[in-house]
Amino acid sequence: MKQRIDTIEVLKQLISIPSWVEGTKDERLLGEFIFQWLSKNTSLEVKKECVSEGRFNVIAGDDVSTRMLMVGHMDTVLPGNSLTKGPIKPVVDGDRLYGLGSSDMKSGLAVMMTLAASNKLPAGSCMLFYVDEEYDFAGMRKFVFDYKGKIKPEQIISFDGGGLKVGNGCRGLIEIRVTVTGQSGHAARPESGRNAIVGANEMIEDLCDWLDENTDPVLGPTSCNLAYMNGGGMQGNVIPDNCEFILDIRPSKPEINAKSVLERLEASAVERGVKITGKQIRHDLGSWLTNQKDIPITELGLPLNELGQTGYIDVQMLWQSFNRVPCWVVGAAELGMAHKADEYVLVSKLKQFEEIMLRFVTKTPSRSDLVGVILVDSVWV
Image (cartoon, rainbow, N blue to C red; front, top):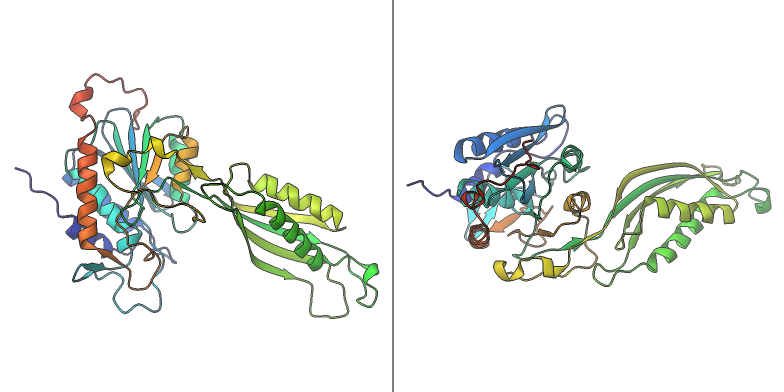
């Protein structure tokens, strides 16, 4: 009889392998460990998906067309300066398991790996272990680029949740850098120039007023953060003719995107006699919301997480790219622990989460129940 995998021991192994991105460090050692572990302990076909030089996603699945897509990211944030415990030395103290990534989200990866080794996965299961969630979403972008139109999952589950609650949506993420040009003049004669800094501030105020009108009843308000501004020079008697700023916008409505934001700023600039002479879009990611009736709340026996003023979750890209199928986030992470010093997960909660997900996957059809399914959209085609 095959011995059951100890999820806690798997998590300890994952924590002991650093996977933050800094200089020459990244997720590749952890990715290699997961690739080898899945190859040895499961019957799934495991492959690497190249993302950039040396960095790769790990994809594991059977040979049935993809019906359930389960995902989790391998990277962590950098270890903080206020740690009192070693970031890659897992420590169990009572019910707490400490270590960088224990909550965000190596505990979720450990449960995914345990499920993969259980031989209880439903037919058409595919697992994605991806890079770069904490930074620029390169791993998720690459998976979407390679598999959009090739697979047709019926539901998507991210194990990057917390508190044994189910998340069904998030606000989007727009980040833009804008350069505003005015006209220099003498400070004693304001009418002799166009102050680019004043113009930029008024443009941003106008934009924020418009964004305030775009509130979703479930996801809450659309927020705007002025993250950076620089303009003018050190000479007090010169009207500044240049200003650059960066905005971080969290749209709660799908119609708010980088295009609509820039159009609003352009119109506002014209009204103020200044010009937008430079613009750069770093992120243009929309909101995501799955109807709660499409989520197996009863089968899971878990409550929905309250939405509103959420951060961005990159599973939104999957939801957007794969025909907005039911998509949800769940996990045992300790709420409020992500990116904190001395991060921990509760061992009891992690074991409970493992049992919940084992029961859930067991209730769906097994591979043997779907013998004869045409493999037209298999991830391995």
